[in-house]
Length: 265
Ligand SMILES: NC(=O)c1ccc[n+]([C@@H]2O[C@H](COP(=O)([O-])OP(=O)(O)OC[C@H]3O[C@@H](n4cnc5c(N)ncnc54)[C@H](O)[C@@H]3O)[C@@H](O)[C@H]2O)c1
Image (cartoon, rainbow, N blue to C red; front, side):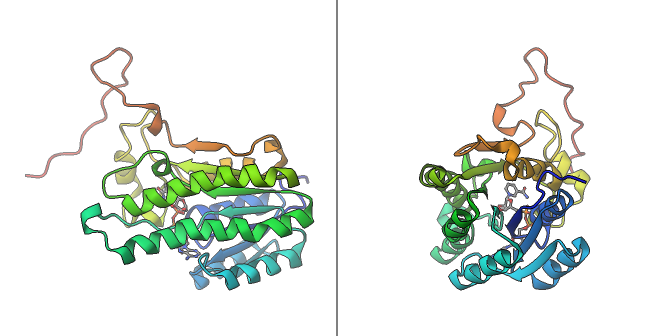
């Protein structure tokens, strides 16, 4: 049986749950060997065990240079490193006026510095492999923003920008670097919200719902594969039409208005 990632070795950060775990399952199903990195060791071990021989879990705090060295070594035990998905991330909602430097730096350190360290760590291994694909998970909030997202948007905007730098520097070695910009995705990051309620919060979008992790995974899988051989420096939006604009219910061709939840008394 041939898979779209046959023979490839990949590292996926933040793979203990959510999108990273979904991508690890999808990569393995398409023939890749996958190193799952995270700080949630029990959850990460469990996902790797469920996937089986094609998967291996390593403790990888993306803000730690020594953890990166160990993760790269673990991947190269499986073969030359072809793919890195810089997916690990955290989200905090605070007004600019209320954001402490400590809170701001925590988000920057994981989302932004973690992605930088991941890219830097992958260069020599991918040169040894004869090329590779680095996929940096940004967000629609790395292109626009929302009130309350100062640290997150800053970090995701930086991920978007450093992806371009990576593409410019690394293309000469056949290393492609792209960013993915999800909209709302139903994962543990969004908290204890039931799926129907989370979908309802996205009813104003052209596709009128939130994404499931595998729908982002499909884009990541494409970029990891040789099907994306001419893609580098690109930003791949997977947002149900969020950034397309606003639907105006008073202009022609508007879809029926979504039913609004009852207003509490
Ligand atoms: N869920 C959404 O709506 C959404 C939207 C746009 C972008 N994203 C981005 O997608 C990526 C995946 O998020 P998710 O939705 O699967 O959320 P998630 O919270 O389910 O998964 C994030 C993972 O990152 C891990 N992580 C946190 N800090 C880490 C560290 N220092 N080192 C290594 N791993 C660490 C967590 O333990 C967790 O397993 C993130 O970069 C997130 O910012 C999510």
